[in-house]
Structure formats: structure tokens, C-alpha cells
Length: 392
Ligand SMILES: *Cc1c(COP(=O)(O)O)cnc(C)c1O
Image (cartoon, rainbow, N blue to C red; front, side, top):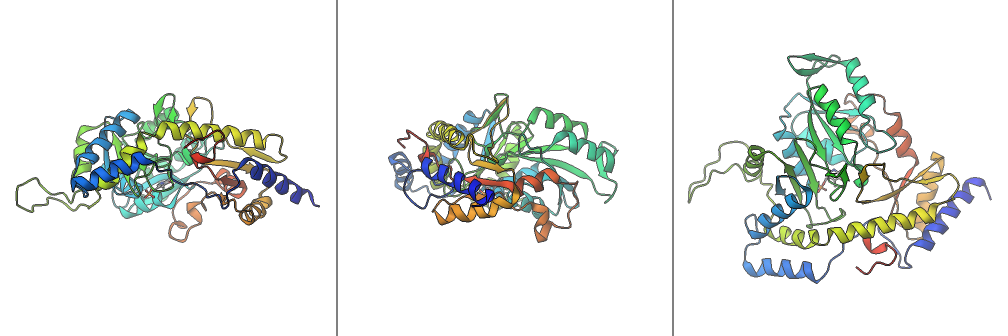
């Protein structure tokens, strides 16, 4: 047997041993209990299933409380939360927005919806998030400050904002990134779609920038079926977010008056009811995921050429998805094939955004860390129910 085959056989055997016997094992599955049925049932009984209702207000209040943001505004999905966040942060047609190439496509789609262009920056291997130092050196080289605005000298366009993504739930180095963003006059926006419950230096992800976006899609750490939220400390932005996501309708007993182009993006009450039940279980999910991470750590320990990605000091990750990094890129696809054959539905990271047809012409800095990590990483099944000693 070749050394290559031995490594992936060894790793697959360790993972099979760790996971419960049911096959297939999905990458991430939601967990529902009587509490979810109770609150959704109550919502149905109330008749208030659509965009107005007590559960939307309650879910927003509880999200703000949980994250420490002053305000949360719930919307139909994480992509809508990003779209609104970028617009509220002042991103306009013709702008460039710095964003890691390692993200889910929605981050870049939201930038493009506004007529702006993503401008790709590289990540650091320790956090999987934007590398602040290398980005700053790059901006020093290509950028010029004009009247407090950073202009890309190569394209002549303003670089308006930086979107930081907390990949797989792992917090980015937000204190450092905030300093870099301030130095270049950039608006700071966080894509915290995967990182509900994750903190950096005891401050929740999504609350460091002017606005942050959460997702409650079916595969995230908690779900509302589909849903998202905008987090902010700013009262005026909160009002603007509510206005922009409810067709900009002015309050009136019977008149239909709308004062700007806007969206129908508010979260329905029925989804918020599900969200309230799920949020009450979030700390349990995180505890289970931290146990599962420990299980994976023990299973992978001593496995040649394989490392489990883990959080950096000062980070408290929700460990939404576990990921192994292989020394050798040529093992990634054979490992994925072997795991799928055995009913373990592991996945690679996303194809980097600069390789997708609609973003291939977008400006970018050299992306060696992104390319190397994507080529060598495999995400492992991470539902909370897979953790050892888990009763949920
Ligand atoms: C899930 C996700 C989104 C989009 O959220 P949806 O609710 O699916 O629209 C955006 N960014 C990242 C990093 C995500 O993982």
C-alpha cells in the first residue's frame, strides 16, 4: 500500500470509530425538540405568522442580549442581512469592498447587488480570516488617501469598506483589524453568519464593526428555517435597517406611502418563533460542539500529515464546523471520496471567490494562503448530536 493510501485509510478509520454508527452522517443537521414545536404552535394559534408579531420583537431582544449588541434587526436570510449591512455602511455603486476570497459566495453577491466590486484579500492560517498586516502592506502599495477616502490607484475607484468573515465560526483578530480599518478610513462590516456564540477577547463576533450580519439558515448553529439578522449599536442605523427591510413604508393607518427604493426582507413571525426556541438551546449546542471538537482532537492526534484546525488564544469559537488540514494537497480529493464511500459526508472548503466566473476579474492581492489552505482542507460532520455523551 502506498504511503498516501495509508494516511487516508488511517484517518478514515479513526473518524469511523469516533462517529455514531448511523450512515450517512451529514455535515451539519438541525436539532428540534418539543420547545420548537411549542413556540411555533403558539405562533400558529396566534394567527400572526407573517412579518409583524411578538416573536420577531422577542427574538431581536434576545439576540441583542445574547450578543451584547445594542440592537438586532431580523431579516429573511443572512444574504439579505449582508446586503442591508453593506448599504447601511455606505457602500455605493462603483465602490470596491475588501473581502477575503475564502468565504461563502453570498458575501460577494451582496457586494455586487449594490453595484460595488469585491476586492479580494488573503487570510492568515491561524484564524482563517483576513490577514491585517499583509492587507495593510498591500493597501500602502496600491492605495492613496484623498480627502479621507482610500482610492485604489490602479482602478481609480474608492475602497469603501472591509468585510471580515469569521470562517467556520472561528473569530478573526478583530482588535487588530479594527485598527487597520481605521487607519485606512474603511467601514468595518462583519460576516458573522457562522459565528453566533463565538467571542474574541470576550466580545461577541459581529459587534466589533459598525454592522454585523448573522444567518439562521438550516445548516447554521441555530436555525429559523431561513433567516438572518443585522447587529448594530447605532440607533439610527437600526431604524434605517427596519425601514429598508419593510419596503420603506411610512407608518399610516391606511395610506401606502413609500419614501425610497427598499426591500421586503423582514423575518416572518413564524420563523422568529422557531428562532426563540433555538436560541434558548444555543449554549447547549456550543457545549456539545466543544466536546465534539475535543473528540476529533483525540481521534486525529498522532495521525501522520493531518492537523485539526483549532482556535487561537483569546478566541472562544462556537466550533460550528470542524476541519482537518492535510500536509499534502493531493490527498484531499481521495480522502473526500473515501469518506463519502463510507457515508461520512465531509466537504472541502468553498472554492475561493476569485476562481468563480462572476468574480474572476475582480481586483485582488496575491492569495497564497487562501489557495494553499483550500487545496488541503476537509470539513468534517459537526452536528451537536455527534458529540460524545450527548443527550440532545
Ligand atoms: C451561510 C452564510 C451566509 C449566507 O447566509 P444565508 O442565510 O444562507 O443567506 C453568508 N456568509 C457566510 C460566511 C455563510 O456561511
